[in-house]
Length: 166
Image 1: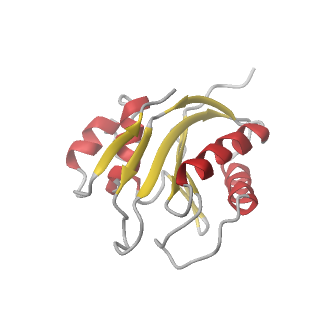
Image 2: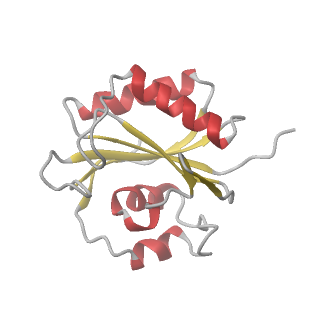
């Protein structure tokens, strides 16, 4: 019997029909055999990094999968490609962005993959939806809960609930 792990993925979009990109990504995630356990609501957030672009729509999901971190990353990249994500400079607009935030308490430090996500503690647009579905989850690097991290993050950008989880 497989041991259940708490795996969190963020979804973001700020081009065209943002909600449609996120909805299609959720469908494709499940088609990969990745079971969605919980979904946050949909949040609007200011762009992070490069400010001169459209407002983002963000969501965080908790999933269950037999895929190991690198295989999960490849699945998410395949989904981004299937949805027409175009390669652009770092932090610029995107059709869809799928990031592994946490893979339970595992620490991964590879050139192409860092878990926990290298910027997770500095981004309200992932911390706020993550707080909604996992306020007691403990960051394996800091020992802090998501609530504690959110209260001390340096990010002061606007993040607001657009639609509650269904």
